[in-house]
Each structure stands twice: as structure tokens, then as C-alpha cells.
Length: 124
Image (cartoon, rainbow, N blue to C red; front, side, top):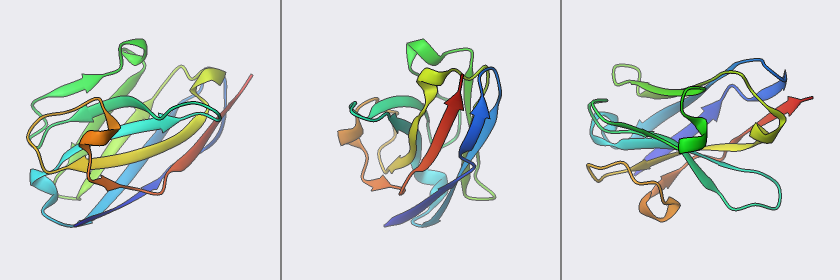
């Protein structure tokens, strides 16, 4: 089992930046593929970004490339999501997810472990 706790959400103005953190405990974090998803009100949960165990492979939603960056620190059992040039449409609950498989998947159904989410609101 892996327990995930997100932090760093909040209210930010259009064009601003935020860094989300996800602290993991339990199963060996260094062999857990990690990802971020988000869910806006009334919408499906969607893939944002993912990173493999070693950090050698990253994947992003096409619409977010260039604005969001995922990273991880296996010594701190933490994964990060740096978000920049934020827009009102980025407003959502952001979730950290983990899976024991080797590959980054863009479907939520591929992830066994989930955090409770952190809310991000971008004001216009």
C-alpha cells in the first residue's frame, strides 16, 4: 500500500504559478510510477502528467505541455507538479496517483493509489 497526501493548492491569479507536492509513505516510493490527474466540477478526471520510477520517462497531456512540469525526489518520497501561466480553465481538484507498474498510463484506471486531492482555483 501507498499513502499519498497532496499539498500546495490554493487561489492564484491568471498567469500565476503554483507548485503542488505529493508526499508518499508505505510501499517503496522509488519503484512506484507517479502521476497527477485533475477533475474540474462536472467533468471527468483527466490525466495531467506522469513520471516513471527513475524519472527517465515523463508524459504530459498535450494541452499542458510547456506550462506544467512533473518531477520527483525519491530521497524525499515526494512528487511535484510545477504549474505556470495558469488559466481559469486550470481550476480543478488535483490528485496524485501511483501505480506499481513500470509505465506511465494516462488512464485513471491504471492507478492503484490515490491521494485526497488539493484544490486549485485560478481567478480571472
